[in-house]
Amino acid sequence: MLRVGTHQFKVCDIWDTIRLALEGGGMSEAQATALCMAYHDEPLIWHAELAAKILQAAVSGIPVDEADVKKNDSNETTTPQSPETSASSTHTAPH
Image (cartoon, rainbow, N blue to C red; front, side, top):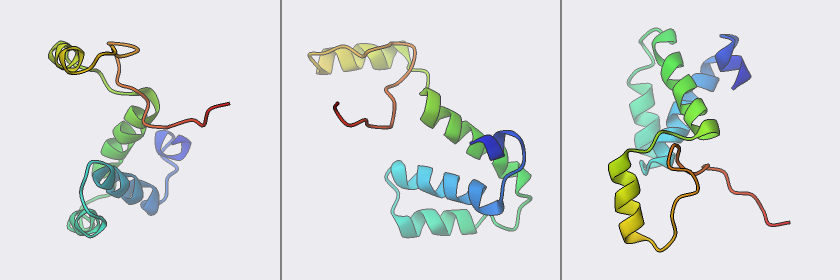
């Protein structure tokens, strides 16, 4: 994340971040790779901002719409920990 934020990244830092985000969103590995490859001819800096936003969302969470919070409250018996951001995408082992 630091390399992307300071513009000292390698090509694979950008494409791997985007590809893994696509896979995390449900796309198959082959589809995600093909989609990324379709954009390899464009200037890399065009995609660096997207990679940075993906990393920021992975670390900090993303804003949640009020409608999403109400929908989740009606579908679940527990409420979200924080209505301002989504839950962390990382899981920690119990101590």
